[in-house]
Length: 112
Figure 1 (cartoon, helix red, strand yellow):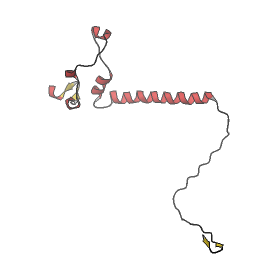
Figure 2 (cartoon, rainbow, N blue to C red; figure 1 turned 30 degrees about the horizontal axis):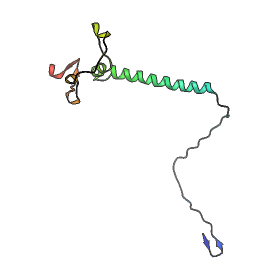
Figure 3 (tube, helix red, strand yellow; figure 1 turned 180 degrees about the horizontal axis):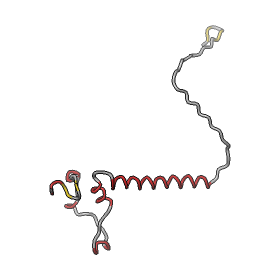
Figure 4 (tube, rainbow, N blue to C red; figure 1 turned 120 degrees about the vertical axis):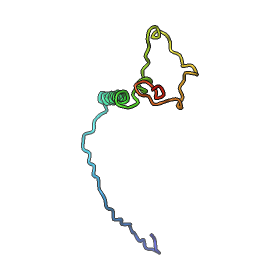
């Protein structure tokens, strides 16, 4: 702030309370090497693969709607159907969200 020919210097002082985090990093810098990079990328991809398997196990064995998910995930084929090319379901066989019912042991509630 300037008043006339004099310059007055000032500062704002705030009293802050709380937790202070101090982070110190020590180490030695080095050159870039491709082998550790590939190891880290491979490990990350393996963890993603394991996560997929764990999610499948939880959905297919532990949830109440496991039969619904199992029917959607796997296709059972019998006889010569295994050798034929699958095509989309006809319009009259497609299931809409309003037609989905709770299932218990492979049967809908209306069947019991």
